[in-house]
Length: 148
Image 1: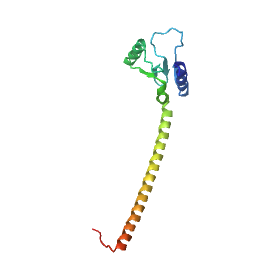
Image 2: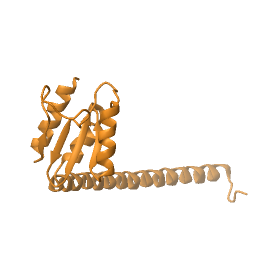
Image 3: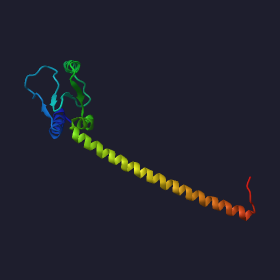
Image 4: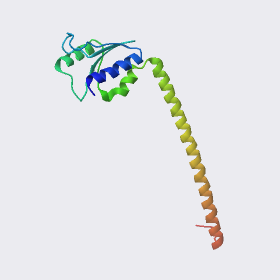
């Protein structure tokens, strides 16, 4: 994936989740190293986009460090981070809705596991009872009343 393609994905996610975003277009003068993307909603995010395991250049690192020292929310995003990125860009209501859904799914799985445990316990109990009855029949057949 190219950086342009990655950026378009991020911009679409930003729109979907109500963020304003700004990217200085290529060819437009900007300070060397300034982050690729600035996103604004309930906070301001400065994001450097990197693809193909590339690392930030010296000037980019300087900008990222200075912004972080100033208390800004600064990160490097890569295509491998897309799931995390979308979760970060979600609005609080969407996040709460997603977490409620996940909680419901976990409760359902918990109930399924509990039902399975009950069924397994019942099956074990039934098999133990059958085995106990079989042992008692063998003891009777052999004339054994007490086993030591």
